[in-house]
Length: 100
Length: 100
Length: 100
Length: 100
Image (tube, rainbow over all chains, first blue to last red):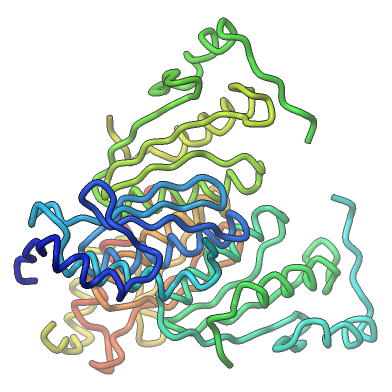
């Protein structure tokens, strides 16, 4: 994979519309999700883990019971890159069971 | 959990309407599912695994890429029991991403 | 399951020897684990998720790449209970691939 | 990824020593594994799923409770290729909890 570049703040803001539910928090893309139960939450995390491993780009995951918080950043680029938008879009597509 | 009893063939047939997509195959409840890709198929299997572990009642799983075949039977009852219908119903609820 | 009771601070300290690698942090049991890669880390989390769902007692999970932090507390007991020690012991048993 | 080529029967036999526990069955590499319980079996399958997704080369999986059967073949090559040996070696590395 070619080296990802950090997007500028303006570029990030402009692209947030592509990934509903996500915002910039502490220099990363963040989304908080709530599922019906742990069963759906962890199934979602497993699907996301597969996408992340294929991309070789992994999220920061926080989970307790039916709640999941994801933080995305590209350490090699020292910022948010297009890889983060790609992973965020994949997460949105996989999280149909989530609300909030 | 109280001992599950095998349902009669008539009882099984009568309850199949509760679990669309399932049929009796070789003395067990069977459903074949097809997902958009391995990512969704394995996320589904993980959610199902969690339900199965909670119930202490585990499916027979066959998976290759985006295809999953589930076979359900209650060995202790030497037949299909209400536990199998419960697990089948849970599988249906979790498999919204599947077709076929 | 019967209601779990919070252990006293003294009881918690006395039992920490049962679960090597864990310490009390901010009123909860905490362990930080480091795996060879994401592949082993997430396989471990899936096994732990299954144990947690069976116990109906779920950890707080933080994961990024090969690192996992687990925080255990019993909200219903408003403290650390024997359920947390049980889950911690199960995590230790499942984390043979981890260091640190 | 470059196109994988089918190995000859002789090549396959010669390389089986690299992957203890595997044999040729019906034109594919097969291994049967037995884990202490479903918890370890499914954690193993999740780790293997991550490796498979990264390789874009997926096993045929059969699982019931603590038993797992894996069949590996390269459909595009119409036979067993080096990808199958690579995936088999990864499975062996991840299955330390298994016997049999």
